[in-house]
Length: 140
Image 1 (cartoon, rainbow, N blue to C red):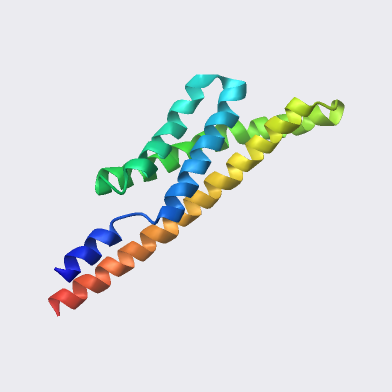
Image 2: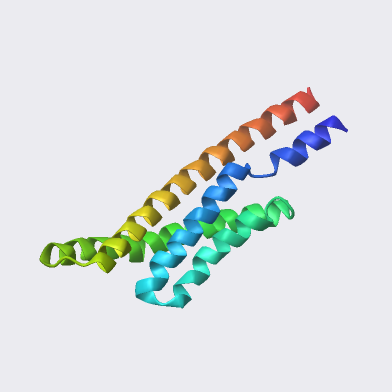
């Protein structure tokens, strides 16, 4: 019975990482929706949904969390990073508080999704290592 509880808990992504994913999704959704419209918020919502449902529906939630993080990373690199560079060039020409706020959101989005990706990779490696150690302990 004890090994089942440990196995069940090992399938749950730590709450720190789930909250980080929610923050990255919210900031990326806002940062992308302002210049590109509300349709942009769909991809980050997958990341947020995955983080919310993962403790309750473990494997599909984990899958949605990882796929959402991958898609948000792709969209941040494709849309928000170039937008941030464009805002910097525009800001050099004129001073605008709206541009400064948009730049801050873009940079925060890049930092949060990068941090989230890093944490997810570390967690997946630790989980894989834990499952292989547990498998060896039960077979040997």
